[in-house]
Amino acid sequence: MDHVTGFRCMLCGAEYGLDEVDYVCPLHGDDGILDVVYDYDAIGARLSREALAACPERTMWRYKALLPVAPDAVVPPLRVGWTPLYPAPRLAEKVGLETVWVKDDGVNPTASFKDRASALAVVKAQAAGAEVITTASTGNAAAALAGLAASVGLPAVIFVPRSAPPAKIAQHLIYGARVFLVDGSYDDAFELTLKVAREVHWYNRNTAYNPFMTEGKKTAAYEICEQLDWQVPDVVFVPVGDGCIIGGMHKGFKDLLALGWTDRMPRLMGIQAEGSSPLVQAFDRGLAAEDMVPVAVHTVADSICASLPRDRVKALAAVRQTGGAFLAVSDAEILGAIPIIAQATGVFCEPAAAASYAGLVSAVDKGMVSAGERVVLLLTGSGLKDVGSAMKTVAAPPVVAPTLDALRAVL
Ligand SMILES: *Cc1c(COP(=O)(O)O)cnc(C)c1O
Ligand SMILES: [Zn+2]
Image (cartoon, rainbow, N blue to C red; front, side, top):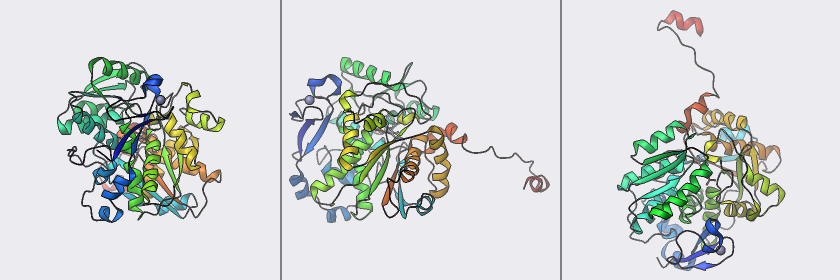
């Protein structure tokens, strides 16, 4: 892995070799989130945009040379990534823009964006010789881990809040993971996982704490650029809970710039639910990530419900360094966005994913996006993950007797 030079601490800038630390910079407890550092000359010598164009691998692993894995690493068999980027002209028209695309990550094997990170976690766990892999999750990261682990026969242990939507818990159980429903919040589950994994030496996939999760997630930024023929979009809308996805998108766009494959950065817009918006508050008040404290949270968008976002340092940097913004949207706006996206694009997404469109509406209202700008919405999870919430947004259909007369009466 001579293309990876090591880790750099997001808080103090200390650098470490890949074998020098386990997950975080030891100088800040569990908060010393690390960034993976690359040798872009080495990568550029091995891979080019032209070589990619000829690459038959239609998964995230087409970018293996840009990931912290050995060139001959065996990857899970499930097809993660290289998800479709659909033009969405009717969605664009609704908000008065010319060009909007939606990136549908609900088509991943376990139906969310989290497969990108969990796939990499499984590769790293196997490389480390781990016998068990574990994660805390609001639901999707665990579903992704359970599925990816099942695909290679690695035992997985899952900690989710007991309030997680049933479809996600069904995924954990059906994939054969050992599941613990934590009588508490996602944040409680996260702390518990840190403690138990240290004690029994399980490989820990926890978001942000494990520095490789950003790396798996950055592949979506590569795909967007490659799918747009390396013409970087102007603005990208990302639903934000812990902030790992938006940090990953930032990393991906920065990598491409460093390689000289693109010539600029998009503005990254982080969208949070009003009831879980600590990053919006920190952004509006100009707070440093280190000064954020846990806040009480509640939202219908369970996947973006986090009281102290674990990847807050990377998330704030992503938005501040690209000239973007954090915006809050209400649960009503989030739910309302689900059928609008579905009917304008054919993509049915879960509440957290729909927040990206609600955020676009808000940003256009505030004059933060102009009509000619090219916009991408990240749709991070499938609507089938949470049918209960989706059903609140539509009227119950009429029941009819199976006769033409009865049908005529209601038509
Ligand atoms: C996890 C998740 C998010 C938010 O990602 P973070 O890295 O926690 O900010 C958004 N949407 C869906 C569907 C998710 O599962
Ligand atoms: Zn440090």
